[in-house]
Length: 286
Image (cartoon, rainbow, N blue to C red; front, side, top):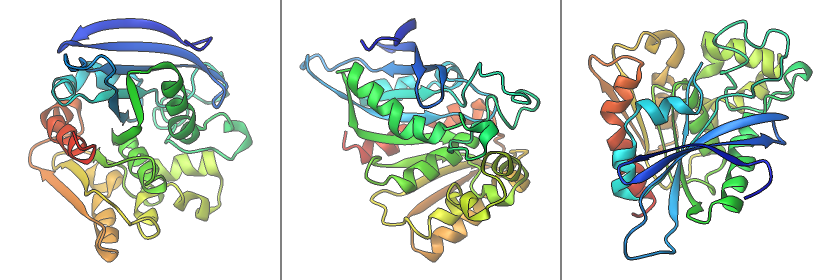
C-alpha cells in the first residue's frame, strides 16, 4: 500500500467487510479517514473487481454514519457493489471559526473547492472527484473505479448531484436522499457559498444542481431522488421542486419520490436504500 495509507478498522458484514482507512490528503492538507464496504467476491472468480458506489454524507457527519446506520451492505453484498464513504470536510486544521456552527466548516465541506483564502483547504470537490478515486485505484486491486456511481444525503445529496452532472464521463448514475437541490436559494447554501466562494454568484451556480442541469443534461440514466414529506428541512432548505422544474425544462430524466411520513433521518435512508442500490446496479450493468 501507498505510504501513509493505513487500515484502522475491519468488521465482517453480509460476508463482506467494512474497512476504515486513514491517509494524508495532499488536496486538503490534513489526515483524512474514509470507509469502504467490500462485498464478498464471487466464488467463481479470484480476480473479480467490484464497481464502486460513492456515498456523500450530510452536515455534521463523518465517513462512519452511512456505514453504521444505513444497512446498505445487505443490498451491496447481493449486487456485488463496493461502498465508499469519505468524510465531509477537512479536519484538524484549527482554522478560526471552523467549528463554530454545525452548518459551516468542519463537517460541512459542501463538496466544493473554496476560493476564499481562509478556507483554501476546503477542496472536497477535488478530493472526491480526483484524489480519492486515484488512491482507490492505486491501492485496491479488487475495486474497478472505472465503473462508478454516486449517491448521498442532504448536503451529500447536493454533492452527488453536482459532481455527477459535471462529470458524466466518470459516473454511470446518481441518486440522492433529501438533497439540498438549489443551494443558492436556501439559507444553508447561501451561508456556505458566501464564506467559501465569496460574493460571485456565478461561482455559486457552479455548485448548484438546479443551475447545472441546464448545461449538463445528456444523461444516460434517470436521476433518482427520495424526499420525506415530514422532513423538517423540506420546505425551506432542500427545494427539490426547483430542481424538478429545471429538469422538466431540458427533458432530463428524473424520478422524485415523495415519501409520506418520513423525516430527514437515517431511518428514512435505511427504508429506501435498497431501491437506490438496485438503481445503481442497473446502471452499472450488474
